[in-house]
Every structure is written in C-alpha cells, then in structure tokens.
Length: 161
Length: 277
Image (cartoon, rainbow over the protein chains, first blue to last red):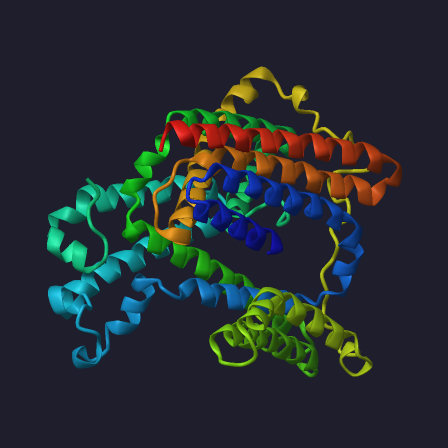
C-alpha cells in the first residue's frame, strides 16, 4: 500500500511540475529516493510479521472509502432517492429528470458489475483490461443514441472532440 | 505477489495469467518476464507515438466506473479477510474474529480521523500537515503495538506472513531464466502483453487524470512499466534474499542497475514530453 501511495505522490509531483524542466529533474531524485528506500525495506521485512491482518483490512476499508469521495457516479446512486429540493441547483437531476438520470446510473452500475464479474472469474480475468476498453466504446458509440450532449454535460461527461 | 502488483487489478490479471500457465504446463515466471518485456516494448512504442491522446475517449463515465471498481475491490478484500476469521473460528469462541473486527474498524476510524485533522483548526498548518502525512503510518504502528500487548496478544489475531520462498525455490538464479521459453511461446506472450499494456495504460492515465484532471502524455507510462519490472525484480530479490544472504550483494547491484535504467527511461519520457506537449 505504501508503494501505491508513494507512486501517487510521485505522480502528483510531476504533474504539478508544470512542465518546468528543473522541477522534473527534482522529481527524478524523488523517484530514485523512493525506490532506493523501497529497496532498503528488504531489511524491514521481518517486522511485517508484527502487522496484524485486520490492520491491513482497516487500511483497505479506509482506502476504499476514500476512493469514493468525489465520484459522482457513486454519489448519484445515493441521490437517486433524494429529494430534488435538497440537491444543489447544478445537479444533473434538474436537467435529466430523475428517471433518465437513474437510467444512466444503472448503466454504470451494470458496467461495474460486469467488470467485477470478469475480474472475479479467474478464467476471464486475463481479458479483464479489454473490458475496460469496451466501456469507452459503449460511451463513445452507444450512449449518444440515448442521451443528448446537453445531458452529458450536465452529468459532467462531455463527449470528446 | 501483492508486492509486485501496483493495484489489485494487475493482481487479477496476474492470477489469470498464472492460471493459464498452469493449465498449459508452462513455468510462470519466464512467461511473465516475456509478457513484461513485450509490454515495455509496446508501452515505449505507444509513448513515442503519443498514443495517450486516445485516452480522451476515456471520459468521466469510464473513469468513475473504473474508480468505483478500485474502491469496491478494496472494500471487498477487507470484508473477505474479516469474514474468513468468522468462518474459520470455533462457533463457541468468537473472540478472535470480533477482536479482529474491532482492530480493523479502529484502524479505519483512526486513519480517517487523523487525516481529518488537516481540516480542523488545531495547531498550525505545518503540524496539521505532518499529522496528515505521518498519521496513517503512525496509526498502523500503534495498532500493531496494541496487538503486541499481553491482553490483546492472547487472542491470537493473525499477522502477516512474510512471503517465504514458495515457488522461487532455493538456488534459483537471480535473473529469471526467460531464455528457456520456446520461441513460439515467446511470440504468444505478446497477446497477454497487449492486455497488460492496456491495463497499465488505463491505470496510469486514469490516475493521472484523477490527480489533476489533465490529459497528459504517456510520459510516465513507459517508466511506470519499467518501474513495475524493477519492482518485480526487487521483489524477486526479496524472495531470493530471504533464503540466501550471500546473494545479497549481487542483488543490490542488480537493483541499482535497474534503478538507473528506470531513471534513464524517465529522461526519455521527459524528452518525449517536450516534443509532444
């Protein structure tokens, strides 16, 4: 988990580097340091035997919860049964209406379930990455038949040019 | 294996590959090495051709489903591991599962709280940032410490098992003997490599997008992969090292060589980004 976290901050560094070359140089040092230290953790491996598995589960719970923040798709699942007056003005429900918004959300839920099924089944999990590509196909060619561009914009998902 | 895999999704791919190898009676590691080599080759081609412009077709629709998947994956792993304690426990004595559950919820709650300190008005911004940066690790250490207490330790909460040498049996060469793979299999490895490339491509670019909602080049893509390969080799080194201490010096050399190679590729990536803004 630390590795993922380390990678994330490293990426963030580079992204905020705003294409300034000396910034990039600096990040290379960071990357090097991170990986050198990762290599050094060979010595700490025996310490891991003191780490209870439930603590790892707790960290996973936290990461899973944290990834949900800012995800409008998951938020729309909750919003599907919220009162319109209590939702913000710019909420897609005001453009699409509850029913159509729920259709869009349901399509996403099914995509997620499909991906999950592919991932869980060890016979198909090797093809799992290709299924993510299918989602792009679905969004680019299939969904525009049912939703207008205005509705996509309201959902925060404008069609790429 | 989890140490090699950057995300649970790569792990899913790997287990699929492993299963396939077992069915075909192939040695997993050499095949995996070839898949990695092909992948790195594809990633470099894609990086040089600036293919990441296609990631713009990956809109919020896909982003959020993908992110939801990552999130569900974490929650699922956590719940499965906690549930297993209940399933395996003696029905007359459920202390261990419940202690595990409280440790997990305690870790979850404390991590959330310690990070939320950043948003409070306590202390100074610097101290709050320190809480946010080092808090989660401190929480992990604290809960591991609590587990060592006499009063908690007697419940026998399971701890991590440091990977012992399961299939990288003792005496394995440090470098995976990837030349032993027959030629036609080497070519066939390109197929899963396409899948792995697309996974890395999306994983990389989607996280980059999530980080600052900006469609950037595949810059780190190529390096990301090498990073992955280097990490794989470091992990391989870990396994080897656990067994044979005398190999350690050699491993360190290899690791530094790979880190240099990794840096070199990141330089390439920077150059590519300059040409392809």
